[in-house]
Image 1 (cartoon, one colour):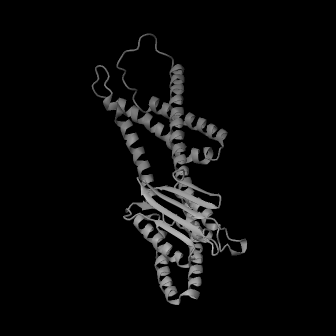
Image 2 (image 1 turned 90 degrees about the vertical axis):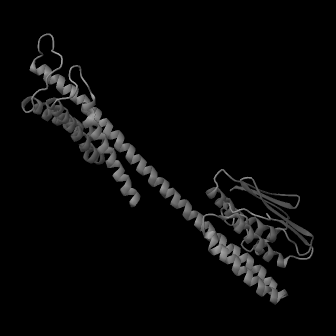
Image 3 (image 1 turned 45 degrees about the vertical axis):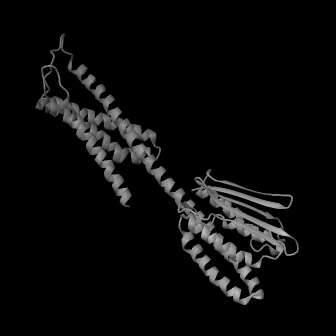
Length: 350
């Protein structure tokens, strides 16, 4: 509301300044032998300017919104012809019978044109000027309406994107919680005391998910701490034959990054990269390089059966959609499976 009011005030200030400059213009026009405009000349100039203002604002407030905005071009042109004819006639009669004709600085040579010729010249000249005023009013008003429509479109697009992004976050949170609870459930059967600690750690993680990740960006330091705690919770249920190596920045910076972008590929690595019967491995490497944050994950591939997917498949698709919304054409994300090894590489700008 405040922004709209400021825009309207700015628009009217532009009008006031524009007309004020035009009103002052004769005082800066010096004719030979006449250093400053006299009262009679200026009175004629003001009358002409008032007629221009009449044409301009009748178009601005009435004809353009009523006809041109509704694409009734023929009616708009007809009404303008009538308006120009009326204003021209009123101005001519005012100049001829009310105002004293201005003195000419240079005497006219040759015979004086007839009254009808003078009238015709006056009418045609003024009609051309009024037509120019109409074109200026149309250009300014239509440009302003286009700007307002474009601003509204961008605001709606931004709101839509934010709503979609929030929806994706809402999908991610229960997905993350579902996978973590599966780990704690398995741990309860193995080590009850450790399971209690895991529940406490889960509380810390959820605090980050529910509060910190609600922000558009978080410091890299916080995101790395969250991932470190999450990996620590996930490796609880790793079988002995599984190998896990994790490389995280030792001193992560405070530069800002969108939260929880790396959680999906890490979840997938623990979910599909580990086998309870065969040797398996997970290698996680996250690092800062210049103005980028890099994530490289390589793991053995043991895809879950359809009946035991536990919500998987949501994460990677969700991640791709979020990346496209947050970092359009500024990120790099690849994932592929080759010879039983699944590789993910993600680069996002800081």
